[in-house]
Image (cartoon, rainbow, N blue to C red):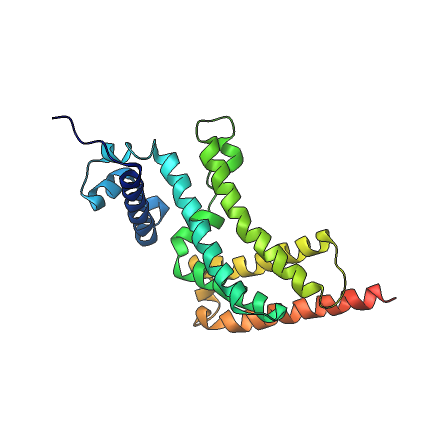
Amino acid sequence: MPPKTRTREEIEAVKEKILRHALDLITEKGWEGFSMHKLAERLGIKAVTIYSYYENKDHLYIAIRTRGFQLIFQECHKAYESEQEPMRRLEAMSRAYLNFGLSQPNIYDLMFTWRVPMYRDYIGTPMEDAARFEYEESQKLYFLVIQATRELAETVAPISDEAVREQVIYFGGALHGYIARINNNLLSYMHDDPADLKESILKTMFRHIKADLLQDRSTSGE
Protein backbone atom coordinates (compact mmCIF):
# COMPACT_ATOMS: atom_id res chain seq x y z
CA MET A 1 0.00 0.00 0.00
CA PRO A 2 1.25 3.54 -0.74
CA PRO A 3 2.06 5.66 2.34
CA LYS A 4 -0.86 7.57 3.78
CA THR A 5 -0.98 11.19 2.63
CA ARG A 6 -0.42 13.56 5.54
CA THR A 7 -3.00 16.24 6.24
CA ARG A 8 -2.01 19.90 6.21
CA GLU A 9 -2.29 19.91 10.01
CA GLU A 10 0.06 16.92 10.29
CA ILE A 11 2.59 18.55 7.97
CA GLU A 12 2.51 21.79 9.95
CA ALA A 13 2.96 19.83 13.19
CA VAL A 14 6.11 18.16 11.81
CA LYS A 15 7.47 21.49 10.54
CA GLU A 16 6.85 22.99 13.97
CA LYS A 17 8.70 20.11 15.64
CA ILE A 18 11.67 20.53 13.29
CA LEU A 19 11.74 24.28 13.91
CA ARG A 20 11.50 23.85 17.69
CA HIS A 21 14.44 21.44 17.76
CA ALA A 22 16.42 23.71 15.43
CA LEU A 23 15.88 26.59 17.86
CA ASP A 24 16.99 24.41 20.77
CA LEU A 25 20.10 23.27 18.89
CA ILE A 26 21.10 26.84 18.03
CA THR A 27 20.44 27.91 21.62
CA GLU A 28 22.81 25.20 22.85
CA LYS A 29 25.49 25.18 20.14
CA GLY A 30 25.21 28.53 18.35
CA TRP A 31 24.83 29.00 14.60
CA GLU A 32 28.36 27.76 13.96
CA GLY A 33 27.49 24.50 15.71
CA PHE A 34 24.30 24.00 13.74
CA SER A 35 23.95 21.67 10.78
CA MET A 36 21.15 19.78 9.10
CA HIS A 37 22.95 16.55 10.00
CA LYS A 38 23.08 17.42 13.72
CA LEU A 39 19.44 18.48 13.61
CA ALA A 40 18.48 15.17 11.98
CA GLU A 41 20.36 13.26 14.68
CA ARG A 42 18.53 15.21 17.34
CA LEU A 43 15.18 14.41 15.72
CA GLY A 44 16.10 10.76 15.14
CA ILE A 45 15.49 10.99 11.40
CA LYS A 46 17.55 11.21 8.22
CA ALA A 47 18.63 14.65 7.02
CA VAL A 48 16.85 14.06 3.71
CA THR A 49 13.55 13.90 5.62
CA ILE A 50 14.02 17.51 6.80
CA TYR A 51 14.24 18.60 3.17
CA SER A 52 10.74 17.22 2.67
CA TYR A 53 9.52 20.07 4.88
CA TYR A 54 12.13 22.79 4.36
CA GLU A 55 13.58 23.17 0.88
CA ASN A 56 17.14 23.83 2.03
CA LYS A 57 19.19 25.22 4.90
CA ASP A 58 18.36 28.78 3.84
CA HIS A 59 14.64 28.03 4.07
CA LEU A 60 15.05 26.63 7.58
CA TYR A 61 17.36 29.49 8.56
CA ILE A 62 14.77 32.06 7.48
CA ALA A 63 12.08 30.17 9.41
CA ILE A 64 14.28 30.23 12.54
CA ARG A 65 14.82 33.98 12.30
CA THR A 66 11.10 34.48 11.67
CA ARG A 67 10.24 32.55 14.82
CA GLY A 68 12.82 34.48 16.80
CA PHE A 69 11.24 37.80 15.79
CA GLN A 70 7.80 36.44 16.63
CA LEU A 71 8.98 35.38 20.09
CA ILE A 72 10.66 38.68 20.98
CA PHE A 73 7.64 40.60 19.68
CA GLN A 74 5.33 38.50 21.85
CA GLU A 75 7.42 39.24 24.95
CA CYS A 76 7.63 42.97 24.24
CA HIS A 77 3.94 43.21 23.34
CA LYS A 78 3.05 41.44 26.58
CA ALA A 79 5.17 44.02 28.43
CA TYR A 80 3.48 46.85 26.49
CA GLU A 81 0.04 45.59 27.54
CA SER A 82 1.14 45.16 31.17
CA GLU A 83 1.46 48.92 31.83
CA GLN A 84 -0.72 51.93 31.11
CA GLU A 85 1.60 54.82 31.99
CA PRO A 86 3.82 55.56 28.95
CA MET A 87 7.18 55.70 30.75
CA ARG A 88 6.52 52.53 32.74
CA ARG A 89 5.27 50.87 29.56
CA LEU A 90 8.49 51.63 27.67
CA GLU A 91 10.56 50.55 30.66
CA ALA A 92 8.72 47.21 30.75
CA MET A 93 9.33 46.70 27.03
CA SER A 94 13.02 47.52 27.39
CA ARG A 95 13.34 45.05 30.24
CA ALA A 96 11.57 42.36 28.18
CA TYR A 97 13.96 43.05 25.28
CA LEU A 98 16.99 42.75 27.54
CA ASN A 99 15.70 39.56 29.14
CA PHE A 100 15.20 37.96 25.72
CA GLY A 101 18.64 38.94 24.50
CA LEU A 102 20.37 37.66 27.63
CA SER A 103 18.37 34.45 28.03
CA GLN A 104 18.45 33.50 24.31
CA PRO A 105 21.93 34.72 23.27
CA ASN A 106 22.42 32.49 20.22
CA ILE A 107 18.99 33.23 18.75
CA TYR A 108 19.41 36.93 19.55
CA ASP A 109 22.83 37.07 17.90
CA LEU A 110 21.46 35.31 14.81
CA MET A 111 18.71 37.94 14.61
CA PHE A 112 20.62 41.11 15.48
CA THR A 113 24.39 40.68 15.70
CA TRP A 114 25.95 38.34 13.17
CA ARG A 115 26.48 39.30 9.55
CA VAL A 116 24.06 36.82 8.04
CA PRO A 117 21.82 36.94 4.95
CA MET A 118 18.75 39.15 5.29
CA TYR A 119 15.75 40.05 3.15
CA ARG A 120 17.57 42.10 0.51
CA ASP A 121 20.06 39.28 0.02
CA TYR A 122 17.21 37.01 -1.08
CA ILE A 123 15.49 39.34 -3.54
CA GLY A 124 15.28 37.62 -6.91
CA THR A 125 15.85 34.16 -5.42
CA PRO A 126 13.39 31.32 -4.68
CA MET A 127 13.57 32.31 -0.99
CA GLU A 128 12.35 35.89 -1.57
CA ASP A 129 8.79 35.30 -0.32
CA ALA A 130 9.94 33.55 2.85
CA ALA A 131 12.52 36.27 3.48
CA ARG A 132 9.90 38.99 2.93
CA PHE A 133 7.64 37.38 5.53
CA GLU A 134 10.57 37.24 7.99
CA TYR A 135 11.25 40.93 7.34
CA GLU A 136 7.59 41.82 7.92
CA GLU A 137 7.60 39.92 11.22
CA SER A 138 10.76 41.75 12.30
CA GLN A 139 9.12 45.11 11.64
CA LYS A 140 6.30 44.41 14.11
CA LEU A 141 8.68 44.96 17.03
CA TYR A 142 10.09 48.11 15.45
CA PHE A 143 6.63 49.61 14.91
CA LEU A 144 5.57 48.69 18.45
CA VAL A 145 8.59 50.49 19.90
CA ILE A 146 7.91 53.48 17.63
CA GLN A 147 4.33 53.58 18.94
CA ALA A 148 5.37 53.34 22.60
CA THR A 149 8.06 56.00 22.17
CA ARG A 150 5.62 58.36 20.48
CA GLU A 151 3.07 57.86 23.27
CA LEU A 152 5.71 58.80 25.82
CA ALA A 153 7.02 61.80 23.87
CA GLU A 154 3.56 63.24 23.33
CA THR A 155 2.96 63.44 27.09
CA VAL A 156 5.46 66.32 26.88
CA ALA A 157 5.07 67.93 23.46
CA PRO A 158 4.28 67.13 19.81
CA ILE A 159 7.13 65.24 18.16
CA SER A 160 8.05 64.58 14.55
CA ASP A 161 8.30 61.11 12.99
CA GLU A 162 12.03 61.65 12.46
CA ALA A 163 12.60 62.60 16.10
CA VAL A 164 10.78 59.44 17.27
CA ARG A 165 12.83 57.32 14.89
CA GLU A 166 16.08 58.88 16.15
CA GLN A 167 15.12 58.13 19.76
CA VAL A 168 14.32 54.50 18.91
CA ILE A 169 17.58 54.01 16.99
CA TYR A 170 19.71 55.65 19.68
CA PHE A 171 18.29 53.87 22.70
CA GLY A 172 17.82 50.62 20.82
CA GLY A 173 21.53 50.78 20.10
CA ALA A 174 22.25 51.24 23.81
CA LEU A 175 20.24 48.15 24.73
CA HIS A 176 21.81 46.12 21.94
CA GLY A 177 25.32 47.21 22.91
CA TYR A 178 24.81 45.99 26.47
CA ILE A 179 23.39 42.63 25.32
CA ALA A 180 26.10 42.10 22.69
CA ARG A 181 28.93 42.86 25.13
CA ILE A 182 27.58 40.40 27.65
CA ASN A 183 26.99 37.74 25.01
CA ASN A 184 30.56 38.05 23.67
CA ASN A 185 32.01 38.23 27.23
CA LEU A 186 33.60 41.66 26.67
CA LEU A 187 31.91 43.16 29.74
CA SER A 188 33.36 40.42 31.93
CA TYR A 189 36.72 42.18 31.47
CA MET A 190 35.22 45.48 32.61
CA HIS A 191 32.92 44.44 35.46
CA ASP A 192 32.86 41.56 37.94
CA ASP A 193 29.18 40.83 37.35
CA PRO A 194 27.92 42.49 34.13
CA ALA A 195 24.39 41.13 34.57
CA ASP A 196 24.08 43.25 37.72
CA LEU A 197 24.33 46.36 35.53
CA LYS A 198 20.98 45.74 33.84
CA GLU A 199 18.76 47.84 36.13
CA SER A 200 21.38 50.59 36.41
CA ILE A 201 21.66 50.81 32.63
CA LEU A 202 17.88 50.98 32.27
CA LYS A 203 17.66 53.78 34.86
CA THR A 204 20.43 55.74 33.13
CA MET A 205 18.84 55.26 29.72
CA PHE A 206 15.45 56.49 30.84
CA ARG A 207 16.99 59.41 32.71
CA HIS A 208 18.44 60.49 29.36
CA ILE A 209 15.10 59.96 27.64
CA LYS A 210 13.38 62.24 30.16
CA ALA A 211 16.12 64.85 29.78
CA ASP A 212 15.79 64.77 25.99
CA LEU A 213 12.04 65.25 26.18
CA LEU A 214 12.38 68.15 28.60
CA GLN A 215 14.95 69.73 26.30
CA ASP A 216 12.59 69.31 23.35
CA ARG A 217 9.81 71.01 25.33
CA SER A 218 12.12 73.86 26.35
CA THR A 219 13.23 74.35 22.76
CA SER A 220 9.70 74.24 21.38
CA GLY A 221 8.60 76.87 23.88
CA GLU A 222 11.21 79.38 22.81
